[in-house]
Image (cartoon, rainbow, N blue to C red; front, side):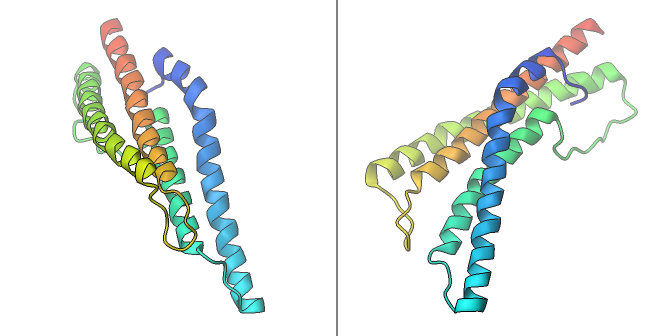
Amino acid sequence: MSGEGPFTRALSAVLAPPLRVVGAAGLAVMALVTLADILGRAALRLPVPGVVEIVELALACSTFAGIALAFLRGEHVTVDLLERAPPVLRRLLDALVAAAVVALLALLVWLMRHDVADAAEFGDATAVLGLPVAWALLAVVAGFAASALALVARGADALLSLARG
């Protein structure tokens, strides 16, 4: 969608800071744990136990925070098949696409809530370090929810722009 309207700006003020922190923290954890593992193996022949598990969990957190940020900022990959279409038609299509993707994201949130609850209830944990998996699943669900909210805001902005002409 083009531009950032009042709904997206308001939501960005609330969601963007924590999404940036989660995304950056996940990347930092991945980089530092990988560096420690490489140095430990090379210098001391001592790998970091569970490095793959730590990186996987951090990757889940940073990926879905980053996806939500991309939706919030309108920086996700798009294909403009109708670049010569009138602006009104493009804004209408933006709103329709946003509605379809919001429906899909809402379905994913609804379906994954069971996975998060089951992982927490049964104490699902990683094999080597025993880290709880529910937190990473919760980060994925939160990323889906934040993405859906971002698209609702962008869709509302597109409809507002359409109404204003």
